[in-house]
Amino acid sequence: MLYIHIPYCHHKCTYCAFYSVARGRNVEEYVAALCLELAGRRCDHPLRTVYIGGGTPTVLTIRQLERIVDTIRANYDLSQLEEATIEANPENLTPQYLEGLAAMRFFNRLSIGIQSFDDGELKMLNRVHDSRQACDAIRNAAAAGFDNLSVDLIMGLPRPHSVGLQLSLDRLSSLLPLGAVKHLSCYELTVEQGTMLDRQLKTGRLSMPEDDEVTEQYAALQEWCRANGFEQYEVSNFCRPGWHSRHNSRYWNRTPYTGVGAAAHSFDGTRRRWNVADAARYIDGANAGKIPFEEETLTRADACNEYIMTALRTAKGIERQMLASLAPQGSEAALSKGLARFVGAGLLIESGTHYTTTPEGLLQADGIAASLFV
Image 1: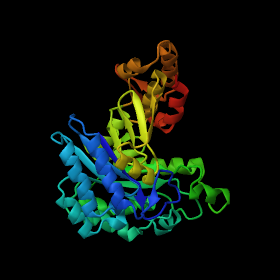
Image 2: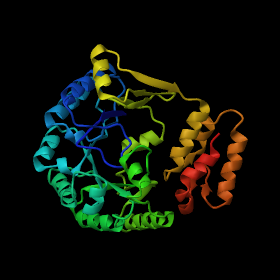
Image 3: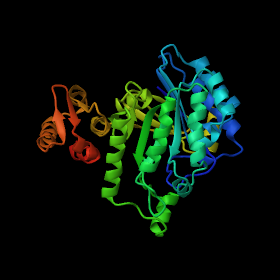
Image 4: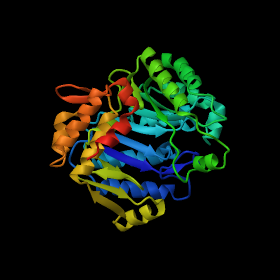
């Protein structure tokens, strides 16, 4: 698994807490630094997935993306590559840009950050595109030959400008006959400290919806997915049968991965490391042959808790054998007791090999996980 972080955006969305910066003068230098790190961290193991995220990767020119892709091809074994994803914003997906992406013959999946098909909601979120561009992006991508599109939406948007999730789902329905949309990610809006949204809520300009309203939106989302042939395989992720995100699914299975770029994280199965979250320092470090990073070695408790948290959010659930291999010595009895309690409460289902959530349990997956932490 290879993840590449592009931190640049046209400007910051109100809710965003990821490391990102407005597109500046050092983009070319950043791409060169990425290529240095990619070459320096080459490995002999075949890559199965590549994911270029951000930020907004499609603020890069086609030439800049070609340089990154050429470096990947020169340094990594792609003989078993299953999935190569690039995140994109609708305003960038013009027919000309998509023609350039297709000509690389590398990306077979686009993840389009639409967030909403309502112009009022998009303005509130400080998105660059409008609803027309969102629809055009999907049509343009399908026309360019991309048949594996993932759409990102957000539910639980603040008042008074939110119209609710249903309008966006209806607009998406009208685009399904194109056949290209195979995946839907729909996340509940979370308020991160220090974001523009956080400040707007504290000053009373906006207010968050009640929990019951968000629960109703989530139920409507699940019903829409069932009616349109999308399977739920994680709390926030739905797909046509067989079109799940292979890259993200491997994160949830604790597969080791390499992260390249400013603020990118890596994981080798035991240690987690993350590059400096500063594009200028990252560039200087790459040029000097020593990119600043921090790292931590996970304890068995850390690894066990991370697995419980991610596994309970998936349709597959907790694998008993995996849990047993990660559980710290002496924690087995408490874990068994806790799992049995949630089975008895009708929130988990126990099989011979797994613990999976019931529909009601899925709504409480994070809370269940936290109570099971060792």
